[in-house]
Length: 105
Image (cartoon, rainbow, N blue to C red; front, side, top):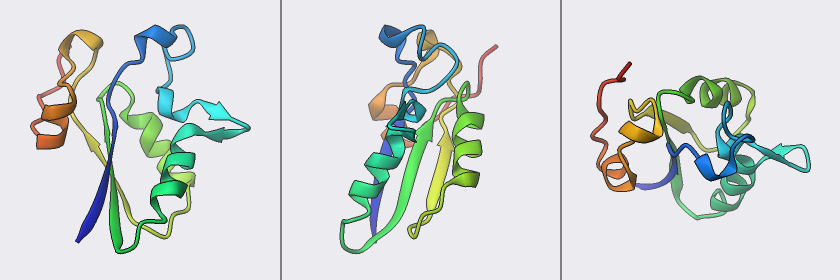
C-alpha cells in the first residue's frame, strides 16, 4: 500500500502576519490553496491509496473545513499532532512517527 504524508504542522512564523491565523499550506495562489497543488501532483503517483496530512492542534479546524470542500479521488486522512504553538511543536520526525502530545494550554 502506497501512502503519501504531507507535513502541515509547522507555524510558519517567518511568514507572519500572513500565517498568524491561517496555515501556510492553505494560503491561496491563483485562488487555490497551496496544498491543492501538492495533492494534485502527488495524485499522479501510481498505486497511491491514501494521503495523510499532519496538522497541529491550533490549525486542525482549518484543514478539516478545507477537507469537507475538497474533492479527491484518493482518500485523505487528517491527523492532529496535538501541538498548540511554535514552542511545543513536535517536529517532522515525531510527526512521521505519529507520536502526538496532548494539546497544551
